[in-house]
Image (cartoon, rainbow, N blue to C red):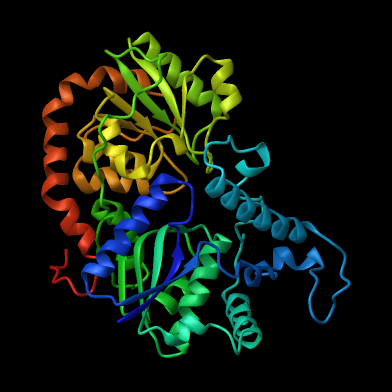
Length: 411
């Protein structure tokens, strides 16, 4: 079978994206896929830069009919897309170098569509198909088209609308389409019904997304993130923690999309008061705090490129605690059996992941309630152990639900 994988994130520098994509590729090959083509994150997002709501009609967008239209904030959107692609290539080729400030910009302010109109989105699909009438070589050759959802499909994000547009084009061309490995939240109902309702398979990463889709009349299965199926390894000798970190009380902190830098600093101070020796794992992809702010606060920093993603679960076994608002960092902690305090992100993916395995520590919006959560950890040892056992027993099986060839029982 020949598969086209849309929204492939394995070329990103984010270790979680790499782990999830590696797990997905591993499962595809185990399921007998003979050839895998990929379309990267945000493929053809320019089509989604057309006005997709009445709120955007005054932007005077350049078009074939009006190529001399005044430059607007939409041009900034295109510019930021180019910068994002350049930053990814820069990171891939110069991993030992610190990313410059411009490379840290991930979402321009207009990357989400407010008051999206579904008919405008379908017209954008018509435009893509007309413009690319002789293109889509890999799409036309594919026996099956798989859309890797991860954390893309939320709040009418333009990259989500682009990926769903490609899925819809595949359906129009008569391809078997699977939407898998996804958290889905606050997307336009008509867009979801059109694409997911026609898909051969829809698999989400947590119960919250399933309940949301079922409220729209869309059938789906609950699986788990493909990162649970990734091929991890142990390194000898083990990569060391920063020299400034006390060996008897190390704590890894990693922010995310839903956190402010002030909250990170407050959490670090609370950890220090509780006797932990925190350091920050800096990824850069929407990170809550800059390296400069960490250095100014005396927080040791480990860069994403200093620890290869396949050894992250083993690396975490050196720490006593993880505090993170990153979905995949929490997965690495679960695999390593390391206690963690989860922090909220830009969707319900953190809450959903913790609920999937019965993690007893509540998801916090920031520093509020953090000291209380820390003090409750000793009395939650039994519940945490049970959650780790559920991960060992069920995580891989749940991840395998993303593959159609694996027999599953609906839940």
